Image (tube, rainbow, N blue to C red; front, side, top):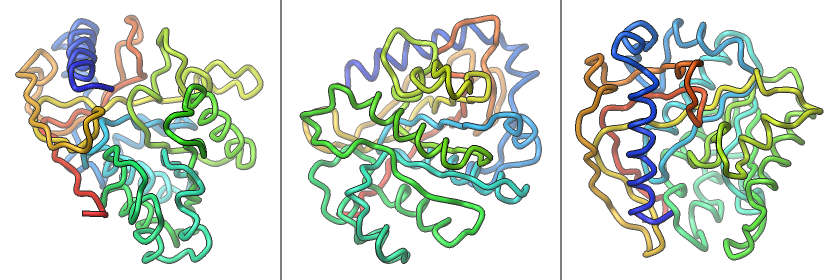
Length: 279
């Protein structure tokens, strides 16, 4: 997605959730988070009824991967078995899948020698895998399709099928995924991974999916908008969401009376640019 389209998309999202969530609604429903990678009991109570938690990010930022780590740790500490899925092609993690060591995470092709840098090939994503690779309560899998970027016409459908296959293999597990925030949209005219999953009549998980969008105000990101990996400064200005509470981080489900592309948001007032493993 180009920088211009990304900016337009986020501004529309800002306006939408601002309209959907009045100041009072935010103040009543926002769950304050002190840290993204270590969530509190209130966050668990909000998420516990869902079986699939889909974290959507802008690639090249640190906060979403930290949040996915926090959710995975939260569920495992409460006794849940967790499927942790990352938007990475399986074949690009062959070394890790074979050796199953911390070193092999960072030495796998996706991180050490990628064919293309999108912003996902960062230490925060690699650290997320390394954090749970020996945790008996967590099973790590990779769900991006094993094709070239030029052949991604059916990418969201293929990713959905990969998620579905792992879900069927482990029907009692919680599933936590991290991907670009377009892929995990549910209420959308797009053909997205999240929409395919929610509308799968055989799985019947529509009401068990919590799709969360990374919602931020300003900071930096390091991603690729078609002109190579670039460091970008972001500042969308204060709005009704950021002004409603003074929290640096919070988790909130969207107003069910309004249409929002995701189930809710995790708010990070400032975002930070991720560092690539290859650098």
